[in-house]
Length: 119
Image 1 (cartoon, rainbow, N blue to C red):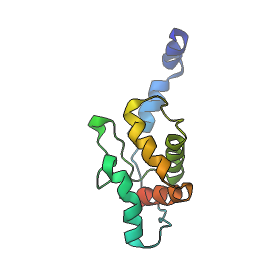
Image 2: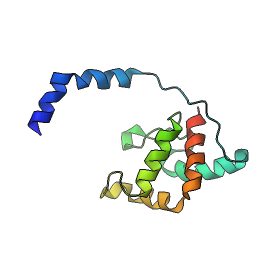
Image 3: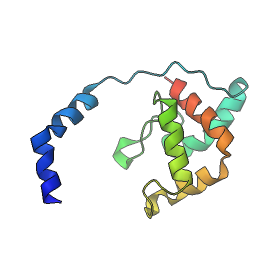
C-alpha cells in the first residue's frame, strides 16, 4: 500500500480531488419518465426512508444526497447495490440492497431521472 500512497502526493491527486470537491453541483435538466406527479412520488418514497423526504440524505450518518446527481450515475449505483457489487459484505447496507432487489430494473431509470430533477 505504501507505494500507492506515495503516488497520491507525487501525482497531485489531492489537488484533483479538491478541485472536484469545490465544484458547485448543478441539477441535471432531465424530466422523470414516470407518469404523473403522484406516480413519481410513490416510486421515490422507497428512497426517502433513508435519504429523507427531500432526498438530501444525512452526511453525519454517511447517507448521500440524491438530488441533482446525474441520472446515469444514480442508476448505475442502484444496479450495483442490487447486484451486491457495491460495498459487498457491508452489513450497514444490507437493508438498501434488500430494497433494491425489490425494485424492477425498468423502474430504476425513472427513479434516477426523478432524483436528478429534484432541486
